[in-house]
Amino acid sequence: MHRWLGAVVSLVVVALCLPSASQTRSNAQLERGKYLVVEVAKCGDCHTPMNEKGEPIQTKWLKGAALGFKPMAPMPWADQAPDIVGLLGWAQSDAITFFTTGKYHGQSPRPPMPEYHLTKADAEAVVAYLRSLAPQKH
Image 1 (tube, rainbow, N blue to C red):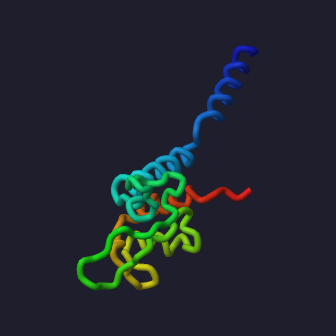
Image 2: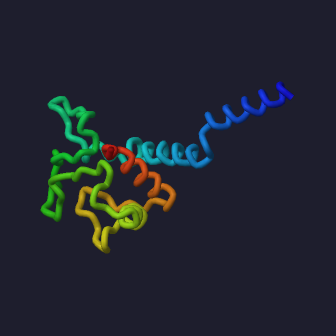
């Protein structure tokens, strides 16, 4: 009986230490979002200020930056890439719609921002990752 109880307690402890399925899914979603933001869309190229050597200033990652390039012909153009850390001011549904349709309240973003057409799962991953970068409220 004593061994059986010890085995049960050991199993419970192990089960409590393992990540839940939702935590694993959440971590996978954040990793997917980070991959899309960092490696695919290269959001930091415009949304992160650069130092004098042209390197991203990591302490200002995705905090918004002046764009260092302009179109050769006159056209509507954004001179500033906004702070996208946490997607402050964006409703969840608006952010997902923006990344799946390329539109925000029916409007296209001004160049050089592309109109993304991500899958819903990828859009949700990008939004989850960007929201995870926001300072935590205590």
